Amino acid sequence: MGVTDSLLPLALIGPMGAGKSRIGRKLAARIGHPFIDTDYRIGVRYGPIPEIFEREGEEYFRIVEREVVAEALGESSVVSLGGGAVLHADTQDDLAGCTVVYLTVSSAAVQARLRGSKRPLLQEGFERWQQIFEERRPLYERLASIRIDTSHRSIDSIVDELVTWLKENND
Ligand code: S3P
Image (tube, rainbow, N blue to C red; front, side, top):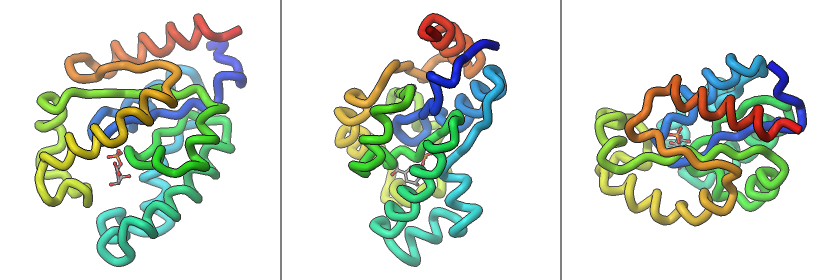
């Protein structure tokens, strides 16, 4: 496919429900590089994320998340990060050396996707999604190499756009 190692690691960031895992997995397969979902890896290593939040709290979750993110970003892969991973200063520093794909989504479009979600930060209601997104939006914007709105598009068309963009930036 010809995507050079210089574009790796490639990190996907953005709010909950933006499509980071699904798009990351498909993109990795298309460009022939490994895919790592940090939330999945946290789950394998530490147990289900809702249980981590319940037992140990968000602060502890951010510590284990940082450990897994640091490891994943060292693996020359396509890496989807949990929505709050960018809060960690060391992760912000690491992302400066990565290709960063910021996936955004409108509140209206994401609401259906997140119905029935077990995500701990949304248990008080969907309004929290918007508040959390607004708090983090400047960070996402600052860290992004490219931004794509996933609200009304198929995964395939987004992956196509990313592959084209990667080829254009592959020198
Ligand atoms: C979180 C997002 C979740 C997960 C955890 C916390 C956040 O990942 O890491 O529930 O702080 O935004 P997704 O962005 O994949 O939903």
